[in-house]
Amino acid sequence: MGLAPPVAAAARKTVLRVIFISLLLDLISFTFILPLFPNLLEFYRNVEADAGAAAAPSKTILSSILGYLNAYKAAFARPIDSRYDIVLLGGALGSLFSILQAIASPVIGHLSDRFGRRNALLASMAGNIVSVLLWVVAVDFRTFLASRIVGGLSEGNVQLATAIATDISDADTRGSTMALIGACFSISFTFGPALGAWLSSIGTVAANPFATAAGVSLFLIVTETVYLYLYLPETLPSMVNKPAEVPSSSSAAAEKIAPTAAAAPVQRTNSHFLLNFVHMTFLLFFSGMEFSLPFMTYDLFGYSSANNGRLLGYVGLVASILQGGVTRRLPPLLSVRIGVVSCVVAFALLARASTVPALYVAATCLATTSATVVMGLNALSSFEAAEGERGGKLGILRSWGQLGRALGPLLFTSVYWWAGREVAYGMGAVGISAVSLLTLFGLKTPPGSAVKGRVKAKGRGGNKKEL
Image (tube, rainbow, N blue to C red):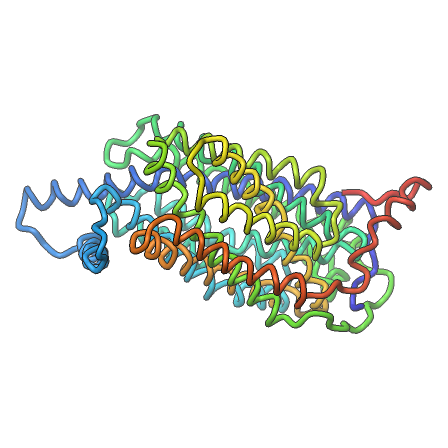
């Protein structure tokens, strides 16, 4: 199997710490905006309405988008209440962001293979800073839309952190390293949205009531960029013998990262096409369920934003616990299989749920899925990639996944409004069942990826692998 020899334990621990801290800063900043979308978009719609009342009405980007969404709503035999207009607009912006990520991710990945992980990540951070800076000054929808476009084209932190983690891990530590990245997601999505909602209640700029949340987000992104510049060494195997190209504070770690032997040629176990297809189809259904969940809880239980916040916080907390104690010890293929089967159960429960306890049982299954599938697929894809193509392959995997995320909410909610909850979630269960069959019978375990028992045995003898 074409895996790089293990790097020095101390260097690996140092780089993992840098990745963990930087991803926490990045993802917490990223999640600030998630609970604010309804109020943000309502604010910009009101701004345009006030401007139109004070002057001759003119065609704007926002009015054009709302016109298309109203035409889309009118196509349904089952009327869609006007209270969903802002939610539909938020979904459209989410789809735009995912489509831009699907375009940008392979490019960012290939650039990291050519110019190094560190350089690609710092360039990505520069784009993120511009994106958040535009949000800080966004007093109209056009500027806010520009912020989302720049962010969609430049956001590469997660895929590059995954590539870096792969560079410094071997077969014994790959799964646990990916679980660490997944834990960053769970922690950030547990606390970030609540913090963003609280910051949005602090008014500082009258023309932009969300400037406080945007300003703190900008501070976190700038802090992350400086931290990465000072402490992240280059990890791309073909470049680690050039420590002079990075600051002295990270040169020592870069020297220790250099492998002591050449990696063997890659022997493919699973085709990248199959891994990418599984990733896309899984996220097609899973993201549709995620997006429709607030509609379902509102219709069935009259849930408010606070109720939905507690539900999502519960999912994030359970996922964090699983990633910290269970997922990191599982071989990646087993992790994926457990996650997709849990997703089938979640769909089946949501199709029939009529009580809050049943909803939380389904949420527990969703947390299990969140803690396992995507990180497991990333690990599997990394096993199938040589050192010089790893960034590109992981970027393409992310691109396919983002395509699923872009299409899933639109397709799933369309079925939800056309045919109702039971049909929508029932179809989702069938779709995820097909994905389960692919993972159970189509994917195979790469050599060297299922060696956890041997690692623990070594650890008892005093050579335990570090996370």
